[in-house]
Amino acid sequence: MFKGLTEEKKKLIKGCIITLLGAACWGANATVAKYLLDEYSVSSSWLVAVRQLGSCWLFLLTAFILDRKELKAACTTPKVYLRIFVLGLFGVLASNLTYVETIRTTNPATATILQGITLFSFDLFIRFIMELLLPAVGIYIAIVC
Image (cartoon, rainbow, N blue to C red):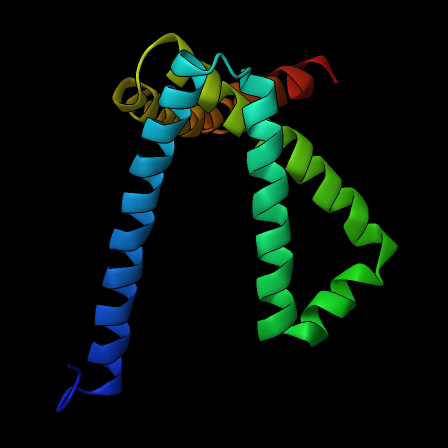
């Protein structure tokens, strides 16, 4: 299939295939989540907990197989535990819970669009804070001092 292609082209094709598979899994995941939420009355928090645990174990297994050294280094540094916990709680868990809750109340397509808009809105908000408000606060402090 990849005969006669350069390594760079092979990597590009492989990346595109993996991206398409990821998008297909994301879409299937949202559809299955909607089905479970509606037909089996599964709670959003239970579904997210099961997804999180499954993905955690899959990630750890993959990291163990592909790069044991890095996984061991991450597990022996106590400082890393706090960072992983904060990211998991406020980043991944909050994002997944709001996504599944949006799927429950609307539909998978709307939830996906809203999640994309949220990331874009958050970026705009951070830019607003960094570029408009912080310089204004700095000027106010300079005037007062």
